[in-house]
Length: 144
Image (spheres, one colour):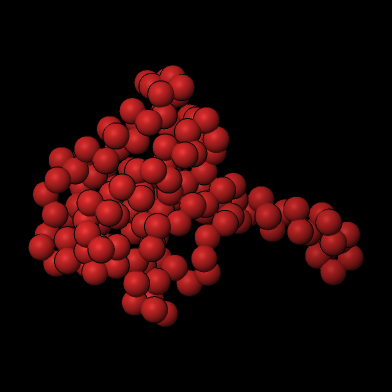
């Protein structure tokens, strides 16, 4: 397809699908790289970073888990993101692999698309979120 003469809707559609496919791959890689730990062992510096951005590690966990459980039955991602511009950590919700704050660096991803949990947990998305939290590899998250 010659890009210069392609209808705008066609080019935009192709670029949207390219973005979805790329982000889907990147977020799934991050999701799987985030697993394999015990969900507990955390470097002291990492605990301090979470506490300084969220008030406490438990406050971060509470927000992250609540966001994941709120997406149960829906689709999307819950991301812990480092914002280099402000030097802060934030939790973000992302849908369709396309919505997130520009410039952020995702360092932890929770996949809330049904394919991630439905075969093992059915409609019990909250139980899946709890299992995810119990298996986070904090050393890998910290290294990112």
